[in-house]
Length: 340
Picture 1 (spheres, one colour):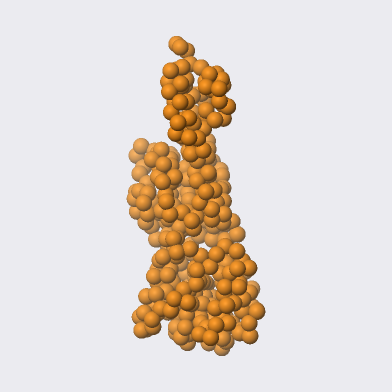
Picture 2 (cartoon, rainbow, N blue to C red):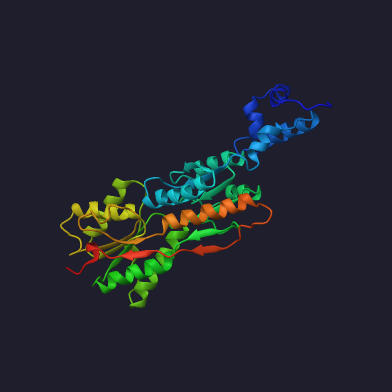
């Protein structure tokens, strides 16, 4: 055929739905390899070319930055989004926010949507289930600018923003030791996460420094269900060899600890001292107020957005370097770790 045909005509020739043909042409994981080959072969044979207007929308003209986060209720992610949005709006960009809900299958579906040109660039924190990163590599290989923050993906050559997780957890654990704790437990959500590995390493370094042997029972792997976490922590606090200090790697586990303590005869900080990574604004209102390690969330969001917008403005001249940028966290001591 001399002149091009429409997607609808191509679909009719293949006896497939236009949406199926479109997904096959966009290399969607939902379409089998056999169908993709069949569609591409027919597209070439019938001289099919994608709508140039639709393509122009895909080529850095949507003025949209996608932000992929693993959960909405964590104050840290809310603040990072605020930081990204602040800079994006100044430059006429808007945000598309996707929540994976800690589900790697959902993450893959979101990534697949973005392969089809919904956004010009991506800022992302990976889910706790993400170990195979082939879907993220595909995104990067397509040339879509992507930056990781907090929960990063080491295998992809781009810029990543983190905080000093190892140092902060080390100092937080040391603070518990200085406050008189002799048995400190570490609460985590997923051993797969880059942030968990670093925070756990900091905790271990601090307890080994004073000559303590890590106890397996004191490294508590929690889950995403609040009730389960409260029960797991309550069991730990009710055991014969219970901890007298808690280092929570995420704020939801500190809140679960407070709830678990209510179901025991213990009290914070008299019997149990608690410190947590947290960006929540209510930590000072808790009873007792919670000692926290606060991440530089807004600054991290600002930096992600600035870098992506620079890349979009000068795609040929500005490179997203393969490097990790660390912005330090801050420890704020409150009542939950006092000696009283």
